[in-house]
Length: 124
Image 1 (cartoon, rainbow, N blue to C red):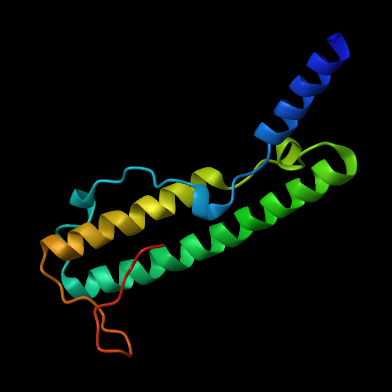
Image 2 (image 1 turned 90 degrees about the vertical axis):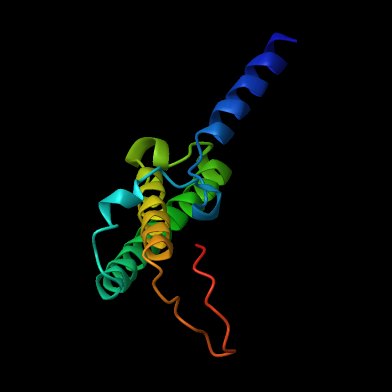
């Protein structure tokens, strides 16, 4: 019985220590007030930059999550526990994207139009 408790606890620690996938990370709160003074063209540039940073950190975080899965499978150790991950960066850039979107809405900026002639959905 004691071995079962120890194994269950060890398994829980291993699984809870794995890096999260980017799509499961919630955005950090970033105030839109930081961007509200910018005009629409500046907001478009800032949004492009923020989305590029989010994509970069999401890719790096996804790589960490994959490494953790292999690490747990092969050696029972989530590698990101030893090397760290990019969860905070993904959360930050998701928050920046949301803040810029809010500033664009409040400034009544025209949303980019996709190929179907509909407003683009800017969710990440």
